[in-house]
Length: 210
Length: 210
DNA sequence: GCGGATTCTCAGCAAATCCTCAGCCGACAG
DNA sequence: CTGTCGGCTGAGGATTTGCTGAGAATCCGC
Image (tube, rainbow over all chains, first blue to last red; front, side):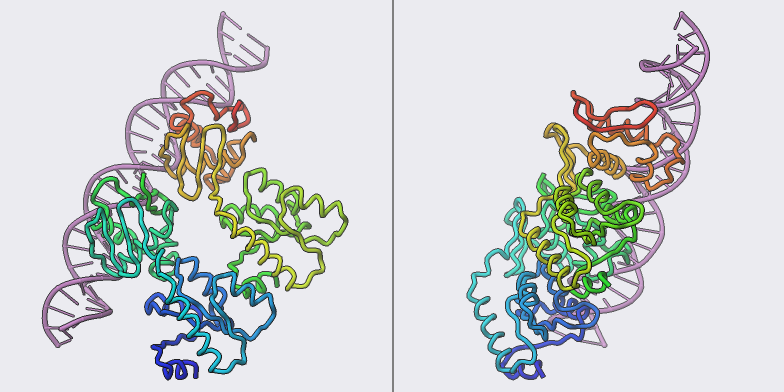
């Protein structure tokens, strides 16, 4: 019903039936806005929101909640939601909030979507990457990996974290993909001194200057 | 029940059934917050809290206590707890306190776990070690050993404890590994005066200033 | 469909790391 | 002073870890 209503309003909509599927859909679809039911099988709405925010995703989120205690409201907003609608709700109300949030977000200068480390730059809006002013072309996975590393400058990320947050895999079903892609990135983006991608043997990888 | 309730709230939860197990779980799992029952077999809640704080661990702790005397309350808070909940308690109340504490902690700048002893520094997030400002490169085992010693500054650690906590071996199947690695550390990190790693003959090793 | 781009697996290689061991040295007791 | 014992160190072999290239499978735009 929601999908139909929002489509009717002119939005492009895709739906997922639980939290896990939702996370995948967000990673793949890069929506402009997420409407999230708190109660979902697998990964509930709050958890999903938290996971997204921790992974550096800033897509606006509107919660649908049956509960109405102030506590839930507060929690929802503190973990990074933008608005919430209590069930049962009128379709009109949801649509209004969706519009309000998109308008607010659109107006904000989408600054801070550009990451810089030394002479390496990644602009998430124009989806461009350059090293020392020279533009570099990356495949989708290469791009996501680099962005995740840049969002966590100076922090050592384990293969498990990378698999989980960049690939959406379980943290332990590796088979050397991470190594391969780190290799790709190094060749495309890290051929000049000082090198930025560092291997921490036995632990993982980190992106930093010195 | 607690585990289920907190999971439902979106938290990632793991449980331990006594103090000893709890200590191990904290070391392995690096939780964002600990809920600690005062009355536990093996190592009670106060003791566990004390041990963690002495080891330099600053993870927020909420106590569950059946006792309600002012003394206990005071003791709990003075040894480094962040909050406490008296039994019997409503699940909602615990959840609220957990949320309150995490929110408070989250707002603080993510004080990355840095251990310092004299001019020796170890940053666990960036996985860097330096002595007198000069960065030093350590192998995984060297790093783990040094971190363990730094978490227990001033305390003498036996070979058995080191084997157990750094290597995960049985405390008695030594063959001189510890000596070898202490040697490595001394060469890499302790070449300058004043020396920090001291041998206590017949007992073990300790890391301290004097 | 077709063809190039992309993703992922895998095996060989090189290097770092781990651990054992034997010889040496110094502390300590008698 | 001397013997014994605990601890230190260097050498080296075994093992682990990470890097790379090649290639199969898959995706995607045309």
